[in-house]
Image 1 (tube, rainbow, N blue to C red):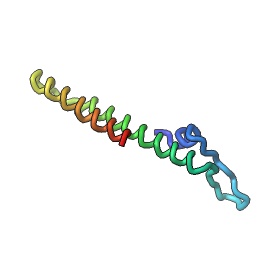
Image 2: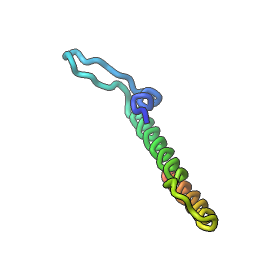
Image 3: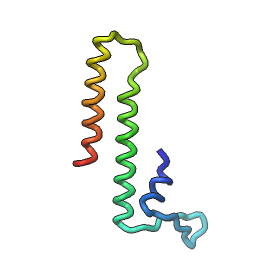
Image 4: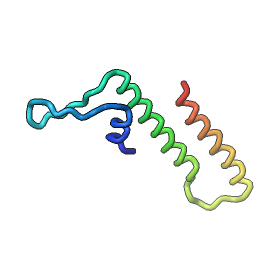
Length: 84
Protein backbone atom coordinates (compact mmCIF):
# COMPACT_ATOMS: atom_id res chain seq x y z
CA UNK A 1 0.00 0.00 0.00
CA UNK A 2 1.43 3.38 -1.01
CA UNK A 3 0.28 5.80 1.69
CA UNK A 4 1.78 8.84 -0.07
CA UNK A 5 -0.14 8.02 -3.26
CA UNK A 6 -3.38 7.64 -1.26
CA UNK A 7 -2.74 10.95 0.54
CA UNK A 8 -2.28 12.75 -2.79
CA UNK A 9 -5.39 11.06 -4.17
CA UNK A 10 -7.33 12.35 -1.16
CA UNK A 11 -6.17 15.91 -1.84
CA UNK A 12 -3.52 16.23 0.87
CA UNK A 13 -0.37 18.09 -0.10
CA UNK A 14 3.11 18.21 1.37
CA UNK A 15 4.05 21.59 2.80
CA UNK A 16 7.63 22.55 3.68
CA UNK A 17 7.56 24.58 6.89
CA UNK A 18 9.80 27.57 7.49
CA UNK A 19 11.97 25.69 10.00
CA UNK A 20 14.56 23.53 8.21
CA UNK A 21 13.86 19.82 8.25
CA UNK A 22 10.23 20.10 9.37
CA UNK A 23 7.58 18.89 6.95
CA UNK A 24 3.85 19.19 7.27
CA UNK A 25 0.68 18.29 5.42
CA UNK A 26 -1.77 20.79 4.00
CA UNK A 27 -5.40 19.85 3.61
CA UNK A 28 -8.77 20.20 5.25
CA UNK A 29 -10.90 17.85 7.31
CA UNK A 30 -12.71 16.50 4.22
CA UNK A 31 -9.33 15.67 2.62
CA UNK A 32 -8.30 13.84 5.78
CA UNK A 33 -11.56 11.88 5.88
CA UNK A 34 -11.11 10.91 2.21
CA UNK A 35 -7.57 9.77 3.04
CA UNK A 36 -8.81 7.60 5.92
CA UNK A 37 -11.50 6.09 3.67
CA UNK A 38 -8.95 5.30 0.95
CA UNK A 39 -6.56 3.67 3.44
CA UNK A 40 -9.38 1.58 4.92
CA UNK A 41 -10.60 0.50 1.47
CA UNK A 42 -7.07 -0.47 0.42
CA UNK A 43 -6.60 -2.47 3.62
CA UNK A 44 -9.89 -4.31 2.99
CA UNK A 45 -8.70 -5.15 -0.55
CA UNK A 46 -5.42 -6.52 0.82
CA UNK A 47 -7.26 -8.64 3.42
CA UNK A 48 -9.58 -10.04 0.74
CA UNK A 49 -6.57 -10.96 -1.41
CA UNK A 50 -5.12 -12.92 1.51
CA UNK A 51 -8.41 -14.76 2.01
CA UNK A 52 -8.55 -15.80 -1.64
CA UNK A 53 -4.89 -16.79 -1.87
CA UNK A 54 -5.22 -19.27 0.98
CA UNK A 55 -2.25 -21.14 2.38
CA UNK A 56 -1.05 -22.86 -0.79
CA UNK A 57 -1.36 -26.26 0.94
CA UNK A 58 -2.96 -29.11 -1.05
CA UNK A 59 -6.56 -29.86 -0.09
CA UNK A 60 -9.20 -32.42 -1.03
CA UNK A 61 -11.93 -31.55 -3.54
CA UNK A 62 -14.76 -31.62 -0.95
CA UNK A 63 -12.74 -29.42 1.37
CA UNK A 64 -12.00 -27.07 -1.53
CA UNK A 65 -15.73 -26.56 -2.18
CA UNK A 66 -16.36 -25.75 1.49
CA UNK A 67 -13.33 -23.48 1.59
CA UNK A 68 -14.44 -21.57 -1.51
CA UNK A 69 -17.80 -20.86 0.11
CA UNK A 70 -16.07 -19.75 3.32
CA UNK A 71 -13.63 -17.54 1.42
CA UNK A 72 -16.55 -15.76 -0.25
CA UNK A 73 -18.36 -15.34 3.08
CA UNK A 74 -15.23 -13.93 4.72
CA UNK A 75 -14.44 -11.64 1.76
CA UNK A 76 -18.04 -10.36 1.75
CA UNK A 77 -17.84 -9.69 5.49
CA UNK A 78 -14.59 -7.74 5.05
CA UNK A 79 -16.06 -5.71 2.18
CA UNK A 80 -19.23 -5.00 4.17
CA UNK A 81 -17.14 -3.29 6.84
CA UNK A 82 -16.65 -0.47 4.33
CA UNK A 83 -20.34 0.36 4.42
CA UNK A 84 -20.75 0.64 8.16
